[in-house]
Amino acid sequence: MGSKARLVPRRRFLEACMFAPLLPACVAELAELGSRSPRIDRVDLYAVRYPTRGYFKFFADPKGQSGRAAVVVRVTCSDGTVAWGQSVPIYRWSYETLETAFLVLRDYLAPVVVGRRLSDIEAIFKALDAALAPGLTIGMPIARAGLEIALHDLVGRLLGKSVPELWGRRPGGDVLLSWTVNPRTLDEVDRLVEEGKQRGYRHFNIKVGGDVAADVELARRVRRLAPHAFLWADANGGYDETQAVEAARGLADAGVDVLEAPLRPNHFAGYRKLKKLGALPILMDEGVVSPVDLANFISMGLLDGVAMKPARCGGLRSARAQIELLEQEELIWLGSGLTDPDISLAASLQLYSAYGLKRPAALNGPQFLAADILRKPLTVTEGRMRPPQGPGLGIEVDEQKLLDLARHTRIDWPTGTVATIHAR
Ligand SMILES: [Mg+2]
Image (cartoon, rainbow, N blue to C red; front, side, top):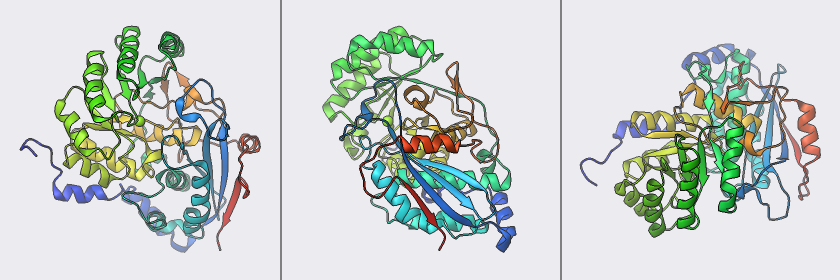
C-alpha cells in the first residue's frame, strides 16, 4: 500500500468497532429510574407486503406474490408506552427474506428483550448483539434493525425526546430526494425521468450492472434530460472486473457522479483497482454491514464512500458509527435505502437529517409503494421530505391500517403472519 493510502489509526479503528452509543445523559436518566423504570412486556410482529406501483427489478417473488415485504415490530411497555420498528427484507437483494426475518425476530431477537427494564438500555442493546452469533459480520442485520429501531422509538417516547435528541443532535432540516430510474428498455427512460420531474424531483439514480454499453447509454440519456442533477449509478455488484473498469470509464464520460457497488463486495482486488483508476468515486453498499467492516475496507483502500442504509446494517447505532467514521476520514456518505416503507423510512429520515446529509437521498419508498400504515403519512414535497416531528421517530401508526394490510397479505407458511412474544 502506498504511503498516501488512508490508514485508520489503531485507536480510531477500535473506537469504530463499537456501535455509537446514546447520549450519556439519556442513558443516565433511564438508569435513575431503577426498578421504577418500565419493563418491556411484549413484542408483536406483523408480516406484511406493501402493494407497489411501477417496475422495480427487486420486487419479483418466486411464488408470484407481489409487494414490498416487511415485518412491523410493535413493542409494548409495562407503563403502556407503545413503540414501533420495521424490518425490510428483499430476497433479491440480500439473503434475508420475509420468512427468515419474521422467524428470527420471533424466536431469537424479541425473546431476549422482553422482560427487561429500560433502566439498563445498554444491556438491552448488548443482549440484542449477543442473541445471534455473527458470521463474517453482524448476522441477520435486516431483521435486527427492525427491533433496534423500535428500541430507539421506545426510549425517545419514554424520555419525551426525538431520536436525534437521544444522540445529542438537533433534528435537522428536510431531506432532498433522488428519483430512481430503472427502465426495462431504453425507450422508457424519457417517460420515467419526466415522471420524476412532474413529482418535483431534480436528482436521479439509475440501476446499472447489466450490459455496459446499455448502462452507459442509459446514463447519457438521463444526463441529457437532467443536466444539473446529481446522477448516481448503482450496479448492485452486477459487473465482473473487466466490465467494471469499462463501466467506470464509460459512466464517468456520460456524466455520472458516483458509482455504487460495481462488484460483489468480496472482490477486494477489483475494488482496489477501481479506486486507483479514479474514473469515478467508488461507493460500497451491500458488503458494509458493521462499523468494523467499514474500518477494514477503508484501511485496505477499497472505497471512496458508502451508500448508507440503517435497515441493512443492523440499525441506527451501526449506521451512526459508520457515518461518524466516514466523516472523520473525509469520505463520502450517501443516504440510501431499501425502498423503505413508513417506519423504516422515518428512521432513515431522522438519521440523515440529524447528520446533515448533503446529497440527494435514494429513499424511494414514496416512489414505489402504494400503501402506508401511518395516521399522518410521510409525504414528498418538491422532491424533499421532512423528518416527522415529536418524541421517538415522530410517527403514529394507524393500527387499523396495519391490521388491514396484514389481512390482505397472503403468505404461504403454516405458522401465521402475526406473533406475540410475552415476557416470561
Ligand atoms: Mg445499492
